[in-house]
Image 1: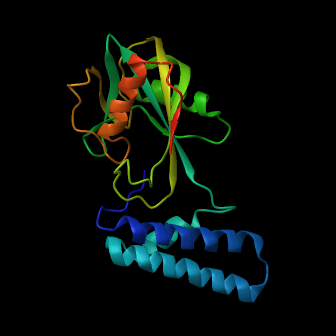
Image 2: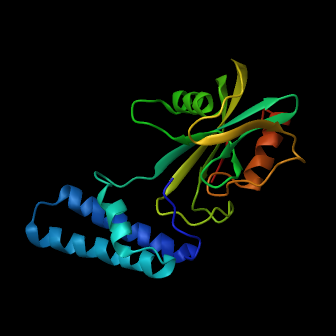
Image 3: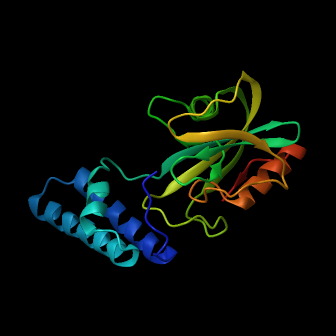
Length: 214
């Protein structure tokens, strides 16, 4: 995941994201040269706002924005809650040396459940089966306290049943382990926060609860 350093307030980040979405949609559906120029200016302003408050170069942010085409929608991040003997599966990220639920971006062509099963196997070596969609969260929502991030993201959390495999690291992960609720190590807060882990343990103990959402 491409990150912006946590130097930018949530409100400035939200304004920058909204301006970028307006520019992206305008550039997608407009063919009038005058309007195209104005939407490019809006994108430039959005990049300058985020650059000013994050200390990331404007050109770097513009490169990220330019890679986004079509109608602007939130990205989808899928995460798996896999339990064994009252413990939850976590993987250690090479990028920041912290732990997270296995998961990542949903790929084009995959259903959400297919994506999360694939991510679990690629990052941990375990085969799983999706049991339930536990939660759908807006990463921007203040209740989750994620660090600032350039994109607007919806996070889908699935409860998955362990059906096989052995712990295996990947090019993204350097360790794989199960942890009890009181044993959770330092988390990669870009990907998952403590309150979400707590909520997943609550669902594990009472799987009849309805899906949680923002």
